[in-house]
Length: 312
Image (cartoon, rainbow, N blue to C red; front, side, top):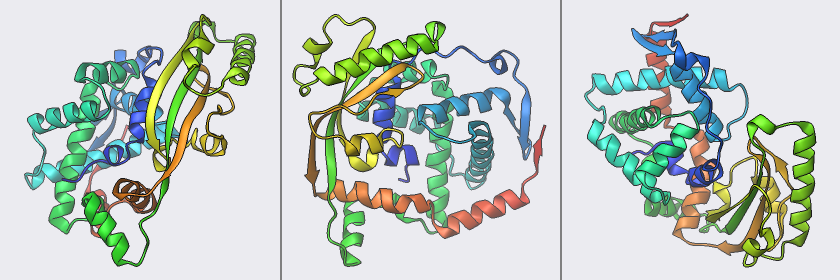
């Protein structure tokens, strides 16, 4: 089964962990008064859809113009969903619900906890399930067109690498902790942020590994400690990756100011691993950026060319 990119890259586990303590998002005005913004072959994309996709992109720590990215993704997904429905390859609600449950479980969450994360982030389970449905369905369309490397099993990926003469690659496996000096949105000011940053920097200096983290944090006010667990190097989110890679085992990254307050990540351990799972992570990170097969890209381009797309 072809899986969406967010499933193929387990960095979303880290994204969920980083987002789980997020302050609930206030509903934007678009939610209260939904307006049709785009029509794709008579299928409406509303301001609510766009707002939720922007929230989804924020959850993934995407950069750039999120509004434009949201619009582009939703138009593309509308085309993919319509084509899947045309050839009767659309994933059923039961399949989507089962995938949602498996995804939650694979990220050490219950379905209700994942629902809470998505609601707090302003995404909603309904929007995420539609995303899952389109990605699952488009995978079937791709398979009908001849498939692509992104649907291969781990062993197939490793075999392909060995066939092309490459040694099985190694990568770094991290065990990480995240420390957040929380700054509520209604108390956010330069003075408050600077004060919290000084506190965070002082704490970093007292860190001596992860075992005594709870005692070091002690009774500090509004400080959250999260165990992020094992993360492969290719799974690291882009905004943290350079800092983590430059930080020695047992030390903490420099602090970063985020939408939650001031944060840093502690490198509990970092070791080199070389096995099928490492090979899969490296191979996918190197090759999946190329996206779908050329046939799938060409087919999507044809669908877009023939489509009637109206921007309101």
